Structure formats: structure tokens, C-alpha cells
Length: 71
Image 1 (cartoon, rainbow, N blue to C red):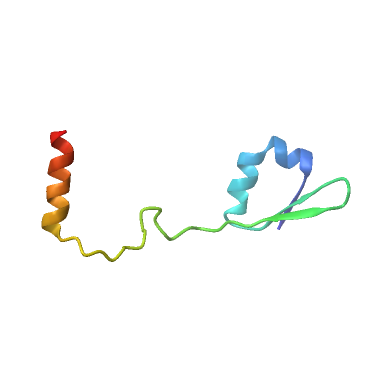
Image 2 (cartoon, rainbow, N blue to C red):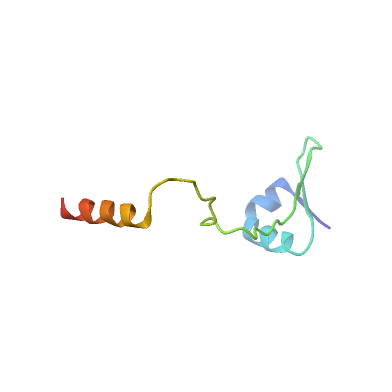
């Protein structure tokens, strides 16, 4: 675990974030407050969205797309 003061962490933010990929980083304020930075790897794609149920068929969708392109 690495410990930085607020000023050190602010000046070296990119380095602090890189270190947080492998270990916990703690930032201390003058007031005594402490904050932990922990890396969380996202395994979900932002394009992974849930589907919806509809009565539209593929034919209906393709027709709507064609119509929108003609306008």
C-alpha cells in the first residue's frame, strides 16, 4: 500500500493511478481524512445493452429504415 499526501497525489495523479492498478493507494489530507484508491477493471462492454421485446419483424424494421433513407 502506497500513501501520498493530497499535494503529492495531485501533482503525480497519472503515476498514482498507474500504481493503483497493482496495489491500494491511500491519499491523506492535512485534516487527517484518508481516501483509498482501488482499481476496478470493467469486464462489461458499454455496448452490451439489454434487448427489448417487440412485435416488429425484421421485414418491418428494414422497411422503416428504407423509408427513412428515402426522405
